[in-house]
Image (cartoon, rainbow, N blue to C red; front, side):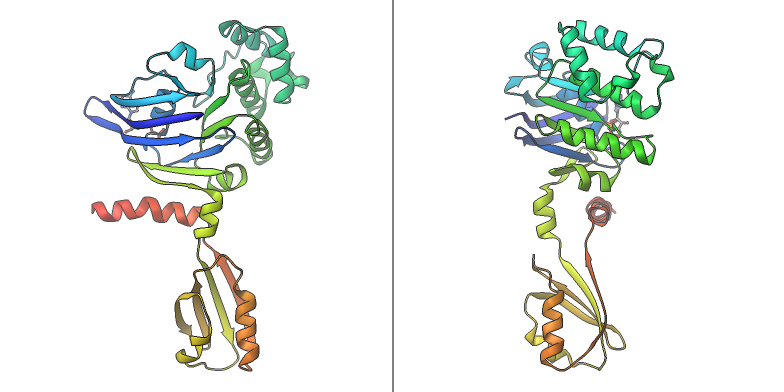
Length: 304
Ligand code: ADP
């Protein structure tokens, strides 16, 4: 197992940042770590990388106990902290050589990582001369310089412009082919674009942990359809797999299906068999964004 976190809790004096958090990850998975500010994401990442000790619980990275052997574990971990702290006055290559020396790797690894993150054209410049997107690449190059099996990236895309966002996402996806990646973000589309799995944390507790495949399979299809005539409720009996339907206005109905299949063709058949005409039809899948809001807000609801 690449990552194994068991019942990790962290208290900062009276502030409970993590409360019995458990999850594990197989090799080669890209996990999106979502949650409102203050949810405990950075704390979890710092614990995984051995920089912060949990109050209780166990953490293994590539089967090495991070609490017992942090130095050994760090050989398998690449970490890009929030706000990407870089030495702005250093040259890119100089900085990466410095990072390489910390991990006791050499010239070859520096050039490898420059090439992997696409920094060739900028590697001779000073870090403070680079755009934010290229600075993120320097942070990523530093994080992968020792070829770690696990990458922990704390909000790697914050502050990037739309083009840089696309580039860094593509880079994370490429790195995820050979590494396990855990990265935090506030952008739901990013998770949909890059991740295999999403973990939602709130107030130190995991609210949801699912693969994107499971998520898409579990999301219910909602169809809004307008027929040319008034239909009796009982006529809908013929439509299978519906879990909910209502007449919203006029001849317009909202129908929710519990099915992975695209139900639009079933509605078409239903209309055809009964000699109705469809004037309008809209199909909606629940987006991760609405799901996130539902999941995180239902907790507020229970608390109030
Ligand atoms: P996130 O990364 O999800 O925004 P954090 O892990 O930064 O969340 O913070 C989780 C909680 O722990 C917050 O309430 C935060 O104020 C608190 N916290 C984080 N670091 C410290 C610290 N060094 N000292 C005291 N409280 C902290």
